Length: 483
Ligand code: DUC
Ligand code: ZN
Ligand code: ZN
Ligand code: ZN
Image (cartoon, rainbow, N blue to C red):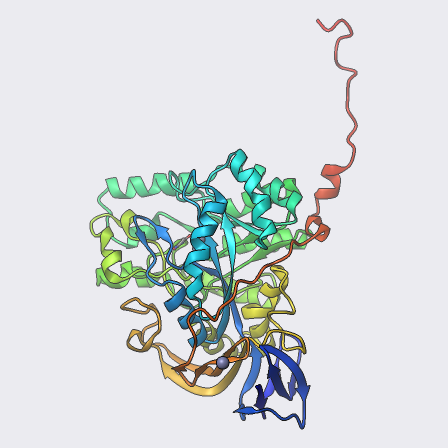
């Protein structure tokens, strides 16, 4: 059975044009005029775009003594409801646990996915087993390894471990990713704030100022440069980190920055709300920043120094957030955003003229498909590409509310926000999963997407050539006698 998306305007990262799109067996088989399909979806007044790809989610993840509340069922339903057709989740080994062991857990959880998905692998400790298993992981089509520079005593790895792992990534054609915050300073500031009696959620923001993110971003870029490998910096939240990324890119280094929709649209004022629950629900790392940092992130999207808008979707219920009453360091870190990323970015970005429609497609889908080496299977409207599509109605409006969301949690950090621009249809490999908010997605429909290694181009860093060139050795200062 074929499906025709009729009377719409195709919008990709580089083109806008009127055409119908014909789909069969989960793929786009024709784009043009005068096409016929068994089933017809009316896209009059709509844009036909590649479905969103969210490269940063934490579904059903064991973290801070609990599990994130959205799993591959509710999480991927939320994704589709908001026009996102693929998620990339982080397989997270507990310190000491093997990578392949963790991967098995993620394989089991992800059988419930309603949309396609892939994984990044986290490197949360270092040893021979990790070194060895990194190769097997890449052979499974997972070519991105995430490192936490914060969460001291839990997930954090030190600089020697980062360097060893980054060099291993270089050998495997894989890309290292970092959560960039100086974990030692965060731990120290947190302890001091608590000792001074600052126990509330606002102290979370004080414990993780922009400086700790900027320092760690600079350090990670240097370590990647010495290892001769590109670097992907997750959740770039502030000018300090953005500036480091901008400077590296200007110097010819292959470094990408990923702002989150939350940091683009919500600010640190949320932590000063008199309602403890309101503030705690917004505790995430890095925390929300002030307007100056938001402006920097928007400038990065329009100028191209920042490449991808993600969510870091890591949702906890109010009951889970209350684990941290009386001690902000025990509030599970994380916020949701899977269902709201596209409508919020369209409303705050395209409707205001801050980014174009084509830039919207680039930062929500195409850029990350290229970085993750799955383009044009994903992130494209082309014959032969997967029919992961969103038919976007720029005139449709709603007010975001937890009462009508797919996510399993009992609130929404965007509650009350008015958005204009919503999916009319979302298609997952040709299957109509959403029609104007009504769900027809299928549990288990989502398939794992393997990602081949990047190849030698991944080593194109500025310093790499210098570091691998033969270097002169100065021996004349050594006494001949050896004494
Ligand atoms: N930050 C969060 O807020 N949650 C999950 C992990 C992270 O780095
Ligand atoms: Zn993180
Ligand atoms: Zn994360
Ligand atoms: Zn179907």
